[in-house]
Amino acid sequence: MLVLWDGFIIFFFRNPGIIDCLWSFGIVGAGFVLNQPWHHPVSDFEIAVLGLMAFWAIRLGGSLFWKRILPNRIETRYLRLAQGWKKNHLHAFFWHFQFQGILMLMVATPFYFLSKTQSMNGMIWQWCVYGLMVLSVLLEIVADRQLDQFIQQGGKGVFRGGLWSY
Image 1 (cartoon, rainbow, N blue to C red):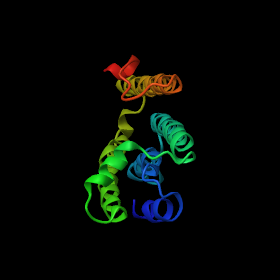
Image 2 (cartoon, rainbow, N blue to C red):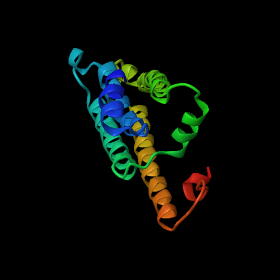
Image 3 (tube, rainbow, N blue to C red):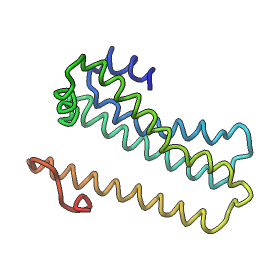
Image 4 (cartoon, rainbow, N blue to C red):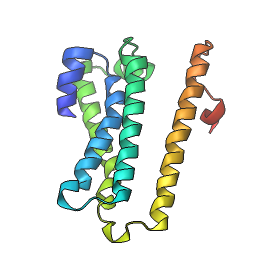
């Protein structure tokens, strides 16, 4: 997170929303390191999961970058955060992003256990979990499209329709 902060936010983008783009890539990167595929034979299940997560990261991170960072659209939640901080905003965002880095590692922790399932390769429960992961990614795509349509139709405020109503 420190490298991302220094390299992307302070010197180049000056938009704290870049962390949202890098969040997905960071989870997959941390998950890959936690999985340690260089220490054991990689199962078909691990390849499927890591591949799906890479697809998720590229789709989500790329979409956020294209829609928010390139047009230099700063999220209102970051503006609200900055208003509440009395000291240097860049310094405060630095520590906020370090905390997000810790959360990223926590979210990626299941990848560690993925590497411990070698003896269970091909079990039906693994593929059921994978099916649930695929369904989750597909539902995220649908929810993002619904949000995009709301914005394109001039919607203001918080979108509460479609999948966002849950």
